[in-house]
Amino acid sequence: MDAVSPLACLLIGQPTLRRMLRLGVLAALDQRIGLRYAMPAMTPAQTSDYITHHLKLAGRSGTLFSDDAIALAHDAARGLPRAVNNIATQALVAAMAERKNIVDEQSARTAVSEITSD
Image 1 (cartoon, one colour):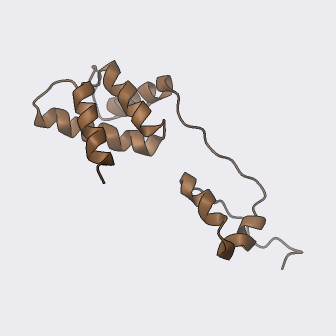
Image 2 (cartoon, helix red, strand yellow):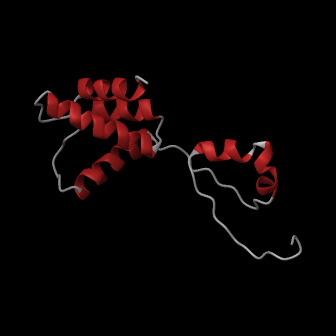
Image 3 (cartoon, one colour):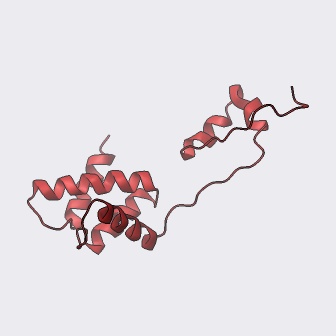
């Protein structure tokens, strides 16, 4: 079986996938991985562009997130896209609940505390 490569496979996942592969029961699979790549976290500027891009896709052309809210979301999410998405969504809900037109730092703080309260 090792002389021929009957299968080529891509494993794509969150950072926890790397830790799971190092478990003893998955050692054989881990040894057969020929190439590894870890996507780096986004920079603050990339996070801002990322949020702006998603808002444009949703049809919003004007400013919806303050710079402070974006900076807080970036810091709390450590630049990881999925975490940025979760915080931004919760911040939108918090701003709506407070009847705000702009997601400000306070809305972002509320979102971070909601997500990290577990």
